[in-house]
Image 1 (cartoon, rainbow, N blue to C red):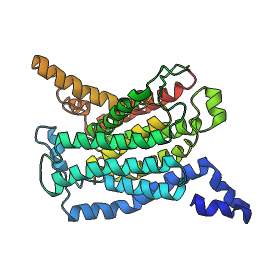
Image 2: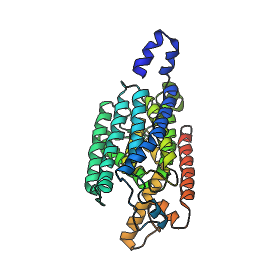
Image 3: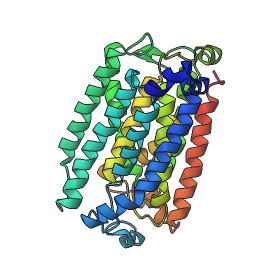
Image 4: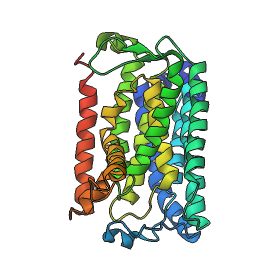
Length: 358
């Protein structure tokens, strides 16, 4: 839309508005929200028609058994909404546009294959864990290759919150570091996606925080004032971040308790992977630990549970990830979700506060 409408400014000055990131980002969010909201019922019907119902594990909270048969693979709706919105509102000549689109569709495809095998083909194991991890690593390396093509003076530098200057230059160690980050974030969102609306609500908060951070990083005046790296072309990431928010809000309409649709691995791997890429682009890799603090806590709960059980034969939590622990302590599902959302909002605010505390 930018490519076709902005040149018309010489005939009608009102088209000048398309050059403003804030305008395009706002309408990208609205477009993604409307697509998700309007297409949601159709996607739910189609998933029901092909019997793409979620199979609930028997060792989890008993209240979850009522969710058996709820359509999964709803990540298709999120990805569709993001892709259409981005193609309409982002600068298609900006390399980050295509890197982000490739990320969300690529990780989504890995999740889709896993969901397809589990839900449609009734293979309870789905994509073998080793093959799934290998696919994520290979695809992460492809993304990192394209990021390296667009590399700048800050690409391999590691910035830490509260410090003005980079902690160190990772040099070629940036490749395994970035790979670990992408695989980690995609799986972190996947682990968190266990309650109605939990992951989608948290992604909304992360998306808003990254929209602000990418806008500031892409403005030389703001970046200079805040003493953060100025990443040329990165302000377009703001448009993507808000399309991510809009798609997630639209999806949450159907995913809130009691959920009419679940995102499945198709959505969770796609959202986690693209969050990681945004962090790499705007040089907020370490800050991602704060921005996505709830995702980090969920992953840590699983690691602690596994290590404790292997070393001592005892479990620290009643069940991992952490949200199930609180359910088994008789917290209602809605209470767990809303309290985790509150925590996610606090983490997002804390991440933004680091801009001046350095």
